[in-house]
Amino acid sequence: MKIKELRNLTREELIQKEKALSEELFKLNEGRFSGRVDKPHLFSLVRRDIARIKTLLNEKKEKQNG
Image 1 (cartoon, rainbow, N blue to C red):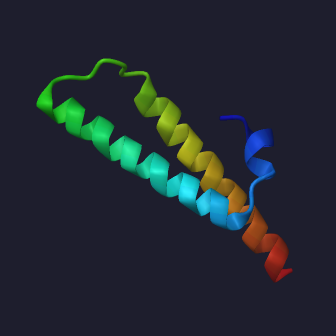
Image 2 (spheres, rainbow, N blue to C red):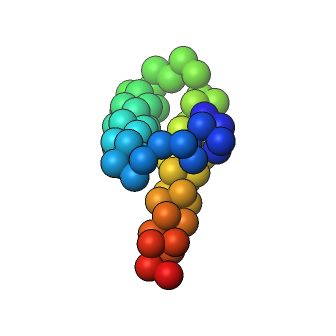
């Protein structure tokens, strides 16, 4: 997911997106520990998207506080 796409979302949408990605990462980790990972590159992609969303949430919070 690109940062430009994420910047257009509201705070609530970003929070929902972060929850969905966290659940996806949890399922990927379950697969890792059970030994059946089809696409190991998704770990880094999902973590990177979560970090992007957290950064945007933090930026919006900073703008709101001053």
